[in-house]
Image 1 (cartoon, rainbow, N blue to C red):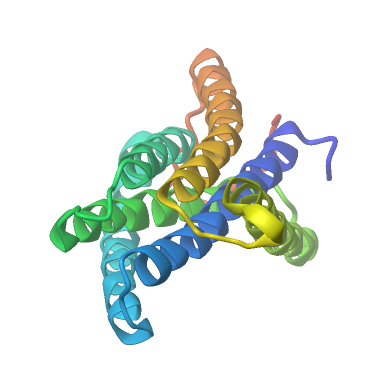
Image 2: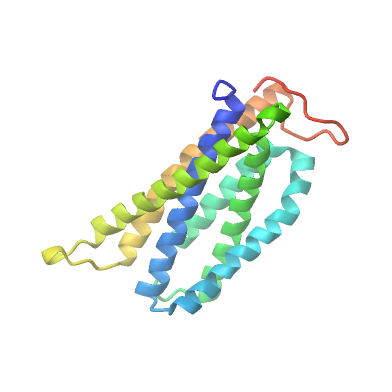
Length: 220
């Protein structure tokens, strides 16, 4: 499987995307509860905006893929995701909640658009008997990515928050440093997605599904 470049790179992008998304959820939860002082109920309600963004993307992404191809959609989704994280990294303790809601709504769109497109890319050209394995690799990349992402964010926040006598103080600086660290994960994912997009342009294959015909195994 990993000899097929499209499948292997799709798994890597999925890993990086899930790592970043899991770290964002972890960091934003700490920011809202420890720094802004919101109760868990209010924090959970703020996260609804990301779900609404995800629903929006779930409706629009198939149309975009049919028009522009999954390679383009992966790249565009990652760019949107990276921009939303940069915006969330810049929030302050006094930032109005609607601004946070808007930023996280955009996050939901970017994440879901990317993941839906990666699910297609990671199983393209795979024979029917091997579809389960291809999908399993994507799920594995998601689970490992989420674990690594939260661990990395925890390390950064802990390093910044370490105070006298080992006391921990969650700060805006720690929150921001963790998110900016995860932007490097996304930067790598964007570079890989850009490579796939350029290769698609060269080969005149942007990943636009052919309606009414089953996918044919082809070069990665």
